[in-house]
Image (cartoon, rainbow over all chains, first blue to last red; front, top):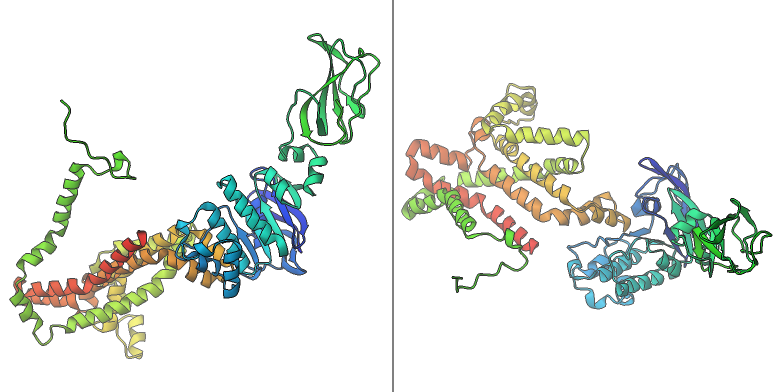
Length: 316
Length: 272
């Protein structure tokens, strides 16, 4: 189990992260550029010293304010977007590079990652996906107890991404894996846990389903890419706080209005339609009722921002 | 009327604007001939009979052996002393790196004769260092050690500057990856950095070797004896004349050039 609860300073920004990743679990780290995702990985790997807190692996303290194990003593592998294969070594020698690697493991990993036929090739003769698979196999051959991946899918086409993700799932069977990836959909599909980082702060740690159903705040919803103005609330739910505009066509029945919401102003007539601004809070199901001064008829909800798709409890 | 001769397509992979024009090819060949002129002259003027006669004298190969031994020792010292300096310069920017680089450049720019003069004041028999060496029954003037020291000063800056450039161009991600895979700092440097720069280091060493074998300015002041090849050439020129000195010029080239040529061939091969 990887347990990280630390703060680290990088330049002028401070990055705070706290999560536990059991063996067999893939934790996805998402957030906008500059949120501190790579720094979190580098701190766990021992390339950056933390300022506060601890990082522990299976009960062994890797880093704290008093202790800093160097990268070579941590058994933590970091595979970056550019796999950094050793150009003077062939695939077999790359996979077996680590002094901890055993010949038997190297051969088994070459087989497991479908690299046996590529073993005599040099890195310059590999495709991007093949190179990433070699990098992951090399990390496992080093008997790394944690695998950290920093945007390993960038620049790969869909088929190569599938190859690499299969390798990641394979690697995660008996160790914690932390995956930084800018494609949120891939993270939500691949990971067991997701931590959302924004401006150096960990905003939420949840399963992909929890995250989609109940983002902690509008920032998280924004990171998930699930916000944006919609022409109608039909089939939609919202993140808190959300601003909704209730639009009632003239002939509509007055059976729909947002409750559990704060009115932002009186109803007004715009281009022949009645509009009402409301602020929904907190996150929860949307119940609509007719106000006393709204003409009867169906009501359209125009949700201006922010908005989450495919959440529960939505009625039009 | 359009020419009926089909125009030659530019070489594959080279943009048309970068493909050498006929004019630049001609200019290149002319420059090459001018640069190699002295070497071609040697081939024209050196008579085989003179070469045989010069090389059959009793002491013909003594200076060559002296030069080889002294240059090998100087090169070993250059590597041992120069490599850490090159690494620090390459790992800059830091104040130490800037200071080291400036110092190396200063030595590079010093005229060899000046280096020789200053070495006399630094390690000569009347200096504290000279006294210290004397207590150990050593001397840094007119000995093999003096020759090694003079060659070291003439050759080291060339190695350090080239090696620093090579280390600076090495991919730091590979060293980092080696550490993450379990290698300590020295192992990561040896297994991940050194292979990247091996070709460039060989080039740097070969330049240093050529400078050491051919060192003259500093050598003539601090190590007139034992004779190395350049001094053999110089004294033969002074005492016997141009024609008699010419065979020793060839010997000097034969001793100095193979290593650089091998290094060049290796780096060409590595680039392919």
